[in-house]
Length: 86
Image (cartoon, rainbow, N blue to C red):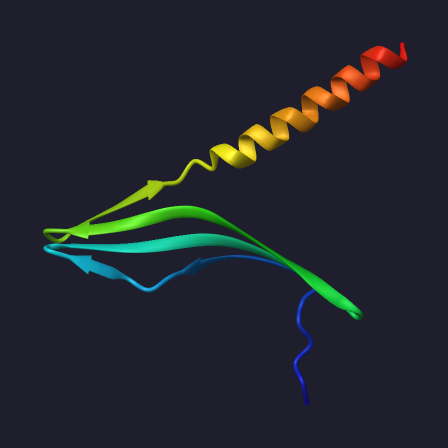
């Protein structure tokens, strides 16, 4: 029997580790999956890189500047539209 998959799935995926010298870098991404009977949507975005060096692990978050800029432009456009309608 096939297992029913959830409609929404939000998870962190880890990519293939890359080793350079004494450092190992592993990329991480956040994935939002929406499954519908007639299709679905998958949205990926970078989340962080995990750096392991000399036995110490550090997680460095990735700031998605493009996403921030796009949301800012959309918000500003919405505010201008509301202002002009008054």
